[in-house]
Image 1 (cartoon, rainbow, N blue to C red):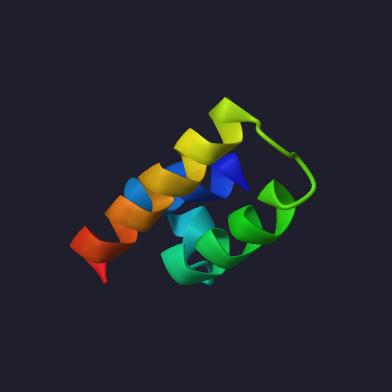
Image 2 (image 1 turned 60 degrees about the vertical axis):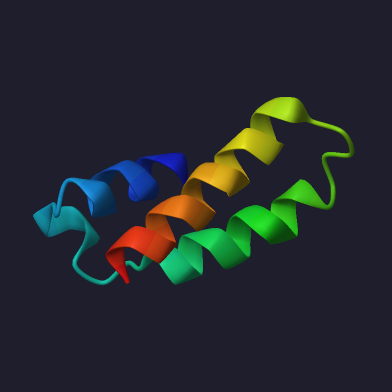
Length: 55
């Protein structure tokens, strides 16, 4: 998921089928299992911001 996020931001060939919305949904889903994980919370915030800017 983090690699896909990076590839999407780079407009990589490998992420043509990916979207920031899909990454965001998956990150939110996973974060529910990682209670109080600051790193995951920060990642979710970064994806949310990138999604606002790019889509």
